[in-house]
Amino acid sequence: YRLRVLAESKVCLRQLGSGHSAYADGAWRRISPQHSSAGGHSSEASWPSNPQFELRWCAAADGGTQRVALKIVLCRGERPWAAARASQPVESMVGMYVFRDDGQGDGQGGASASPGIDVDVANHTADPPRRVALDEGGQRLAAGGLPQGMQLLHESCFTTGLEVTCTLQLQLRPGARLIVVPATFAPAQFGPFRLSVHGDLPVQLRECS
Image (cartoon, rainbow, N blue to C red; front, side, top):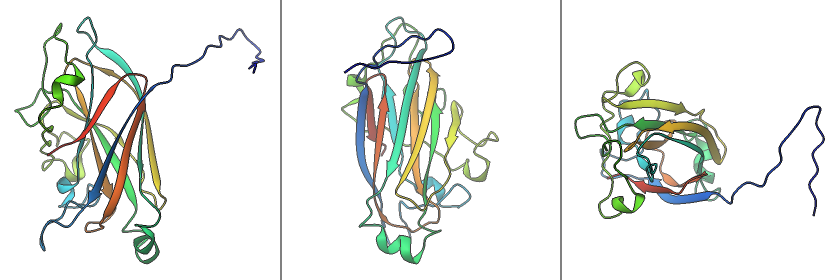
């Protein structure tokens, strides 16, 4: 086939690479009669109990910052969520929060690295990544209520639909990682979901424990 572009000014047309993708299945679950991993949105006191997922990339060869373009998709199946969406459409809405963790905190964040040290994705496959202490966040996520080195990058709208999407272009320092927190609008909304990441660099996606 042939693709032709007509424009008023000079334009460059080139084929994009195939890109890289990673997937992780998760769920908001009841842990005990008093506790669950379905903490609701960030104004809820139980919000920090939501699942957390780590995104990590290979560091740049020169140990410097690198530009990352990615798309994060949170989706849920129609059948498992049909009853909740029909009976509690607002409470069962889904959304997500995306944080950058530069690894400068007190051990609750990601692994730090010095310039020139290659932080390879393969080096982080043995042990599951650690959760970030978000108890100080809550309603003031963007107002300094996060651990040192943490920054809120994106807070999605909550939707009654089946999918939420976030597109980001970032400059990441060596050792930095992203933390994705999927959430339902209200606490105690249980069901499965899938998190997928698509970008221009190889990426590792794992649930924190």
